[in-house]
Image 1 (cartoon, rainbow, N blue to C red):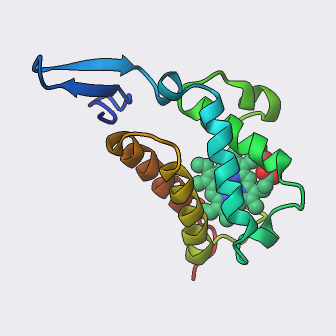
Image 2 (image 1 turned 180 degrees about the vertical axis):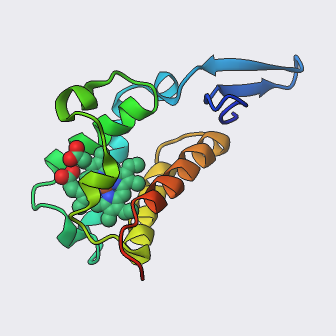
Amino acid sequence: MTGPDASGNPLWTWADTTQDRTCVVAETLYELVGPRWFDELAIRFYDGVLTDPLLRPLYPTDLEGPINRLAGFLRQYWGGPPDYSAERGHPRLRMRHAPFMIGPVQRDAWLRSMVHAVHGGGLSAGAESVVIEYFVEAAQHLVNTPD
Ligand code: HEM
């Protein structure tokens, strides 16, 4: 399984060593894993939030909305239907995170829970590292408060 090609498009491929060729199995992560995978990822992520004393107070008591928004955004980002934008408008994630104090400590706590959630998703090691790399960059981009 490999990640983005030179043009930046993730090509979810696997190397067929017996035939000495690479097969493209899906053009996008969404195509590879299907819609439910993103809901399950968000549920696992928020399971981690529930027991994290740093993150839990940032979120509302009822996590159903956050689960659906995160899953919908990720589904759309990774090649699924644009339902998130239809419901919420342009993602503007930096603006939407402005009300929350996000420093390196919050970023790392968020990433800990997300990396754990990704590890539970049954992806190959190659696909996992593409997805985790994305989250590391995205979380850094949302830091709005210095240490
Ligand atoms: C860096 C640490 C982060 C913290 C502390 C954080 C915290 C939060 C909080 C408190 C909310 C409000 C809950 C809600 O109403 O949904 C939220 C919303 C959201 N977050 Fe994060 N977040 C972080 C990183 C990320 C990253 C890296 C992504 C995406 C890759 C992301 C995607 C979202 C989305 C899609 C929403 C819902 C936006 C909306 O439509 O209102 N967050 N986040």
